[in-house]
Image 1: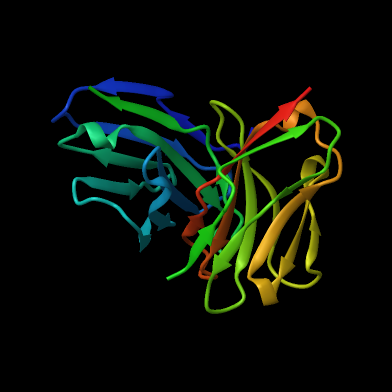
Image 2: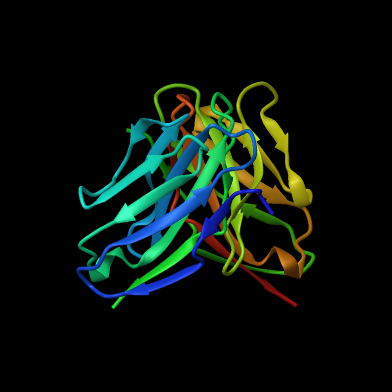
Length: 112
Length: 113
């Protein structure tokens, strides 16, 4: 158990819908990262937040957004969902300056 | 831009045999390198990491990896594989800014009894 929690574990929804994925980092970690794992794209970095501020952006679509709250948990919002958004979404956390990231169990999103 | 290549998509080894999983990276400076393992239905677990210093690093579960700058490689090894090692293994590089990890495509390891 990495100490990073993600909810929900599974999510099934329809095209065009909007969903929110939630992540709680390890106690004391200030950085939260979001990754997408799909069969065709592999594991891709989406976005990073550090202590509430966006710090780095990767291959994140404009339909996706994220935020980190004062209690340091983070949410990833996915809107206007398409079939191709079906994937495993991972959250990871780190202390900040430390480059070691600890991954949560992931949320499996299925878009029908 | 940094990139990571894992040339072997699938590898099958017999239980008790040695294992080497290949990883090549492309990065301008000295990278921070990682190996993660993903068991079916699970998240990613860090096996080991290289930041600097000794180029042979030891990790958990009996794994080790060697950083070879001249070959831009960071291969993962284990002297004797156990059936529980069957999983997918990912090599990753960090851009040294403490943020994004770039992952290789992964190598799926199968272990024959």
